[in-house]
Length: 193
Image 1 (cartoon, rainbow, N blue to C red):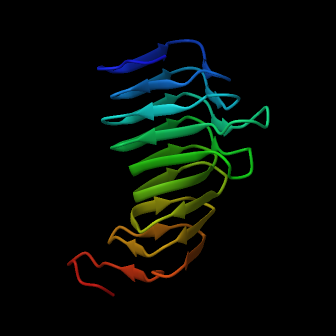
Image 2 (image 1 turned 60 degrees about the horizontal axis):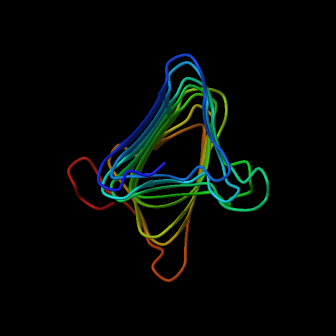
């Protein structure tokens, strides 16, 4: 599916949305919605979401799995603006960190855990069910908020700034690596701490 000068919206009220091998979806803004089902993105010569001039929004009543199920191409989400993922189940990356979310901002909400490999500058995550949040990111990163009832693991290749709303979980592991790998915290007043 490709909209050269417009948006792509694919919606299912009571079923699933599957973007499988060869199903590259490109538009200025891309929206996939399965309100009462699941969204599956499988790479095999495709399975990629590309918002060329705006946001990629994925809403699912169930789980979202970014996967290279057939071991070939990488399933990915790319947006020049925000990647917004709202899942009624877990958001997973079952291919061992090959799938990638690339955007200026990632806002991910799940019930049951979040596990993603990303290349984003701004990050907000919220998991409300049993399961951990694991983000492996590349590039300078500002965390606007991360919450999980279990644990949060954030591995970043680059510097990390944690905003005043911070990170909340039973356990937090935050790692910044590489040349510019500072970790900073900003207080509610805007002061560095």
